[in-house]
Amino acid sequence: MLAESLGSIHLDAIYSSPLRRVLHTAIAIGLPQNLDIQIESDLTEIDHGAWNGLLRSEVEKRYGPLLQQWLASPSKVRMPRGESLGDVSVRANRSLVRILKVYPEGTAVICSHNAVLKVIIAASIGIDLDRFWVMGIDNASVSILEFGDRRPRLLCLNDTCHLGQYHSAPEQAL
Image (cartoon, rainbow, N blue to C red; front, side, top):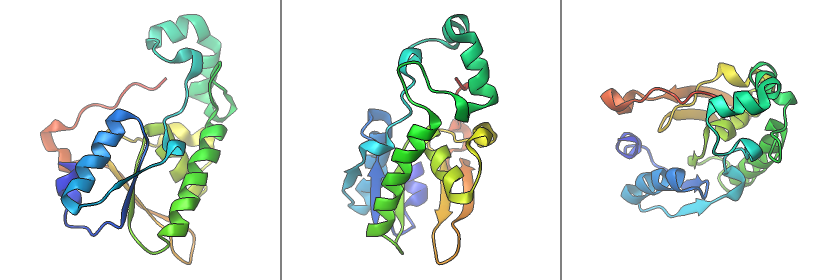
């Protein structure tokens, strides 16, 4: 459904995280337009470190105070044996700079993950990373950033109307 909704738009490139779910989405978008997918490891989801694979209840039990700080002031948290939002922002925006150098006036799709997309959007429009939770990014949603002579502009955030009845509730944040 996402690929179909983007089918009427000329796309110059598709960049994707190497992780399977996102890569499958990128392939579905690229096939109808005969576009190769360009893998960007810098678009991989945040590394939750010791939290990876744990249920929220387990994270609360083992890392309660850190989880509360993550929910209140996410920019100040580094996941145990994982990343901080600052780390994600550095690598994701490094990828964005590379993409904009190749396609300064074209239309490039970035298929990535919740945290990565949020930090790209936040950095582009000047939102502090502690406001991370005010943005919603659902699976298979469309957000549009326009980069021109002026400051980047957020034209669309988290559009899921193409999913109709198949829109699913967003995942509970960790």
